Length: 534
Image (cartoon, rainbow, N blue to C red; front, top):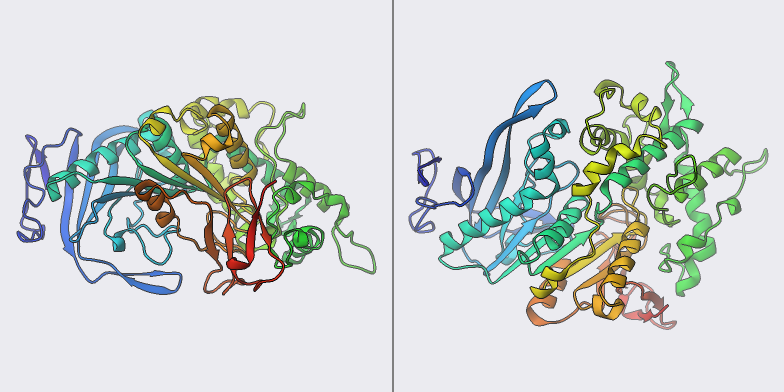
């Protein structure tokens, strides 16, 4: 289909059912510069959720482009547009669901609504679902050379796609949606905060997981971690540090074991989960076993490296440049290593994703000395006294740190935040700090809990994973809050069907409430745990 004088001409190659699509998408008059590239009816789709196969309803799949244009690229001009995919179920529940993106975006996630929606994804529940590539195509960060592409990635794509999707929904079904929801994690979590802060009347309920709310400063922390590990890592034949050798799996397991011995029983049961977030602040790395001729342990330089890492990045004057990190036993899991240390075969994602983002998207202008073929060298040359100032401009429109939710609150919007304590990408403490500021600016904890609540997940890695109870249904929690007025006083979380905590359930209480064993029930059941006020 091509846009011509505010009408669409449907080509013979597009499959249209006059029964399921009485209007098709013909004649839609968009207020945005939108091109519909494909529509088709899909039936018989299945998805797997936590090892369970779920059938999806019949739906109309609509793909399109918004604001197609020519912009700047690394070596000249480049083509850009905001791509989206919208799925319109035959049996619609009259609700709209925006699936947040992740990483540097550049691809459209399949808009099914899988992230922390229990065993029943959003599309299977009858939501009309949409996702976007955030205004650029491809997994690299070459879009950082174009200012409009940066703005699309930061916030504009959320606006454009929401307006366009709601228009199509209204035209397609002949009525408006009753409720609108946004659910995302990581950069998708940042996008959820963007939606609440910038477009406060677009969504009734928002779920924000492990948000990249302080995105540019978190990227500084990634540079910090790489330099720390490089200092103590073994060198390859070319003299380059092999980051994964800084700490072995056994080294990190020793750290976790030490944390567990000191703090795990504070919640009344030894299960590898430290629910007391203050315990994660109290850990003293000097208590870690030291390596001797007769015993295993960590070297002095390894202990010092961990101390620097968990204190967070600082400039030469000792000024913090991001947040500190939680001493959570989940840091020994492969999910933590995947981001921070990598393996013999695979570089850590702090390098493969973080370095290019810093050089080409968060730095203004784009770092002239950045070499995609030698990312490690660029990081090792990063200067924490002079280079962080180059992220200030990008931070002004990419970070989502505002505490002004006036429009969102007037719209009666609700927002759930959640964060894993063993997250290696964005510090859970940074999200906690943000939530504390949110309560300060919105009348205190009780008043803030009327529209926003934060849940912390022990040992969960980035968005999910880790030796944790990382399976939970945030979609039901947010819809019950929005549509029934039932605020989430607790959310039941379970271990993955393939994880170490299979069969174990725990309640997640809203911060700052802690989870405590009642001393008498089944230690594997959420029913045996109660809330404790700090």
